[in-house]
Image (cartoon, rainbow, N blue to C red; front, top):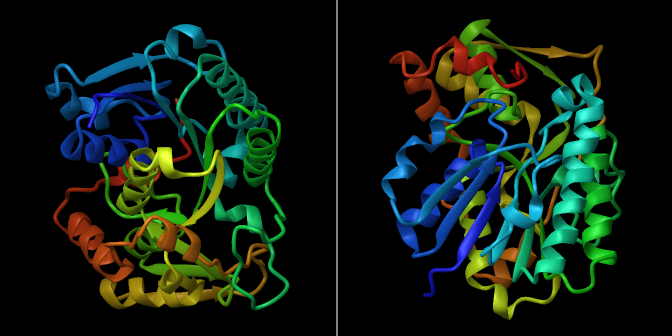
Length: 324
């Protein structure tokens, strides 16, 4: 394999740190990481040991010289975003600027520079509210019902329809879970664990709503597979990333957490969950011979042990939307 260079924007984050670890351990690719460090950068410390294959640049994608950033880069993975509805509601202007405007600007410059493939992490939240029990494939109607999903859907449209020379892979990822160098607790399964631990009760609204989930390491594996197989893929591809057997009703996930942490569940009837979707992951599974490695029960046990042993403290549990 050649020592091509992968630029990872937002590489100090949750998915980014898991992806860098996979790339440096398993391949000969060089990695250039670009990050604004909203949450700090300690997730990157171990990677500096890969002396000739790892480079870090601090900066803001909205203002940085993209010509300079893309020099000698072969692949771009754009993870840079304000992720999730709470932080996007808190900072709507920044969400629009980072999630959409800066992404489009980076993609246009990547097309101009002849980048081999642009990989954009989108979300299954784009499917919004499914009115049927049908599992949704990549051709299903998109129905974004949050600012976060709107920025992702609008980005997808530009990437897939307006940049004909840019080979693109859009990855609509299920909701992430699992431990990584930088872990988040503002995600569905992790929120249940956090509440069970800090409040000794899990509060669930929209208990019967469906949501697909996927381990952060499996997302990293999927991105790496795209890069390794880029030459054999169509110029523009959209993939759902996850597994059919990890579509869960929220109450089922809450019960898994409650069983492990020996706590109670309170179902909140006054608050509804507008999102409800089951997703089909057959396309990526078949085309790239992909299978997920991780399950939620084992991860809940890992996180519970990390909490019980003091490995995860309150700073980690509550930092997710408290950006600097």
